[in-house]
Amino acid sequence: MEKYIINGGYKLSGEISIQGAKNSVLPILAATVISGGTSIVSNIPKLRDVDMMVKILSSLGADVSLEGDVLVINSSQINKIEVPEELVREMRSSIIIMGAMLARFGEVKIAFPGGCEIGPRPIDLHLKSLRQMGAVIEEAHGFLDCKTTGLKGCEIQLDYPSVGATENIMLAAVTAEGVTTIRNAAREPEIIDLQHYLNEAGARVVGAGTSIITIEGVESLNDCNHRIIPDRIVAGTYMTAAAITKGEIIVKDIITDHLLSIIAKLREAGAIIYANGSALKVIGPNKLYALEMLQTLPYPGFPTDMQAQLMALLTIANGTSIVNETIFENRFKHAEELTRMGASIKTFGKVAVVKGVKELTGAKVSAKDLRGGAALVLAGLVAQGTTEIENIYHINRGYESMEENLNKLGANIKTIK
Ligand code: UD1
Image (tube, rainbow, N blue to C red):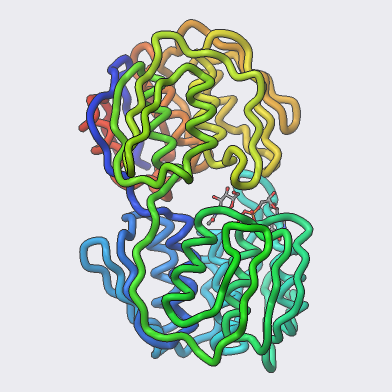
């Protein structure tokens, strides 16, 4: 098992270019199934989750090749309708393949994705919506057997603006008969990116980025070329790294608009941030301030995927902060690990109270999930002495070359086996 060893206390400085967004790549790769032709997708980050989705596509029979950061996917030869169970278990978001397979073949068999490190993560909204569109889904022996004689457009009112459910419906609806309207749709930038890809391939989707998305079914999709948007969570993580180390870095190749809630909270905590086109300069303050309330919400609220990293910062802020995680249950596993490093955190269900301490101290800790792992890296960058982080495979699911990037910025971090 690989571990990170971090010697803390170095201020970060320099520039970093931000990778493509994991949460855009996954649904777009699933979408490449629909056309039965060739999709060329660029700005692909090198990540374990992306490898998983490529494995899923290949296991179904697609021809996938990677050159630099460009994936070429030809889905014409797909000849299987069963998604291998071990791949679904590895990556829960593989459920996104359902909508695409139903759109292309009217059939898919997939293992029921279990719970994961950050809570039970049900898929009831996905299933209810696909059923509403005419899919017959049987749940037996841990598998979902989905069939349809033809999906039909309809009005779908989501009980909650689920990102995955919104994407699954969009994929199922692009070649369905008639018009599908999703109300209370998720508004995340990755949904807009999916709309762009689909429309580049000949779909008729409007409204992504708002709560109402309308999809007018078309006969089929065409070959297309698409570039993935920058990863706002990776950008936010490096911005937090600058703030926590009292450093000064320039984060390049980003879309500032996608980062406004993160910028607002980092500024509230004392960071100085200048925006200039597709770059941001982040200067860490001498003194960090506690946040009266850090509440995670669906976009454009503060992202749950940045909660852990901000919590790491708040552990050494001046005063007491309240963190309210409203999206996922059980997303405070990093709190216990941060406490091992000297943080003072008490959790009560979905609320954490973080009392700022003078300094963190290096310790042996364990990454329990992707973003929680990133939070431990941030804490390690500023802790006195050496921090050892186990289970860094979680971090590699979402961050490309994190060690190399941080060392280039002046950190002292290495991987050991
Ligand atoms: C996506 C992101 C993830 C991010 C999350 C919230 C990807 C690959 N992952 O996950 O990084 O943290 O959005 O921004 O894009 N829910 C239900 N029933 C459902 C679906 C969801 O109850 O059918 C609940 C979930 O348990 C959770 C909440 O809704 O509490 C949000 O989930 P959702 O927006 O669906 O997140 P994901 O698409 O899984």
